[in-house]
Image (cartoon, rainbow, N blue to C red; front, side, top):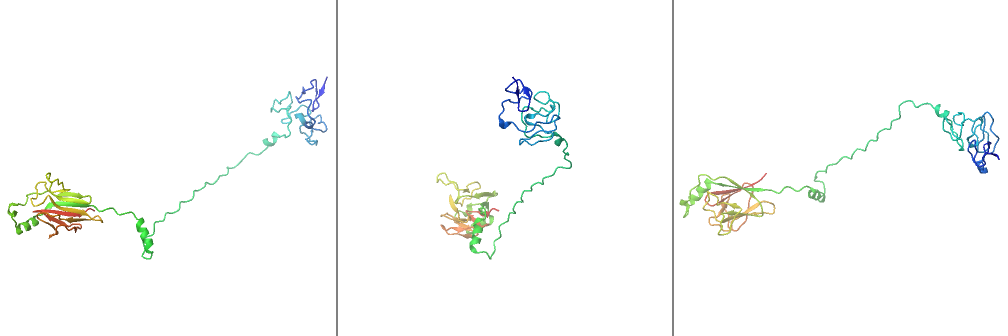
Length: 283
């Protein structure tokens, strides 16, 4: 028993063609109708049945047993030159000659311009205060300004010979027994805190002043708690004599006891028999 495949081959097998491998019982919709190809391979048919000169026919077969892609002699189900599968329908045929004849690319490749990032916006400095601006605007700018550094003060302690001579001129019950020291080193005390006491250390009385004048040579006219420096709200200091035995003078003028006297940069405080305490504002 013999059978004929859709490509027109005679096959002893009734399921697949022994020549091209196509199924013998292919559905009618897969069989392309049309006139058979010429024996010299000069024609074929399309899916609509139109003749295509020199093209392949359904089933990948061409008259003369040539490969529809490279025209090499056919042997078996695959082309030994390009590997074309003769058993698979190929509705789209690409001619390799078209690609071989395409002109090569010449000339430099097109360049893509680099994308430049946008320039940053300029930073504008705040406008200076002007007399024409409203008072509310000026106040807001002043509030936003950085606060000024708090003032710092120092007390410089030394011996004043001129003050000693004035005390001796006034006299007193013990004035003749007090001698001016040969050498008194200058001492500096950084003023910190709201209250700075001036006097002499006393263990029995529990007094330990921040400015201790009991260091030799000690001034015998200084009381244990002779004076107190109090910090004002603006950061400056004032001096108070709480009730010393010999009194306290500021810039040569004795101050009343219990009254706070404001101090400015460079003011001199005299106490005892020769002690001078000068307050300076640090730069």
